[in-house]
Length: 111
Length: 113
Picture 1 (spheres, rainbow over the protein chains, first blue to last red):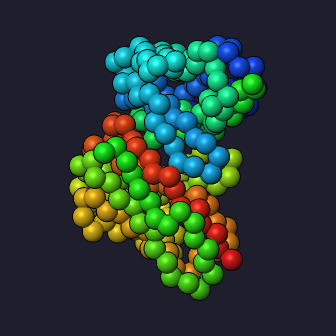
Picture 2: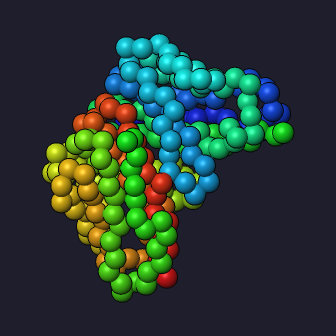
């Protein structure tokens, strides 16, 4: 059964800092991995989708990498801003259940 | 249009009420999903519809009844809910079931009294 872990559970950084969020999964036979952002009480916003054949995806200040063989993905956020404060969720698709989510990393960017 | 809409935004209902949640998308997606999310937890999959047919039911109690009248619309009918069913209910869609990027709606905050 696929399990997804996100470390750290919470992170607080000063504005302008570059940061890395980590996601690991137990079954490396995945089809894709998706990173989401969720603001309190709101729905999920898709940030990046990486297919299993890809190594990374970029969107603006965000860069997500995937190392399928080691069961890891990272989300790199450059020059963080207070507006980046949210919970970041990693989710993988690996066969039977469309998406398996990690518990998320709660990010606070302090001005 | 890359938007999934959900109504209502908030819903308070008693344990004997019957109510419905509505989800709509006009992106031509043929897969639609219902998720339940409790506070500080990740979303949990409830149902998947693929081409208007129920393809996955994650052992959800029968007091939750999904319906997909057409390819753009997904309903969740609620009856005789319990207080522990209070949660954020999220709808999502994707081009097809499995292996495609999912787009989520803003959710309905449900409180059962």
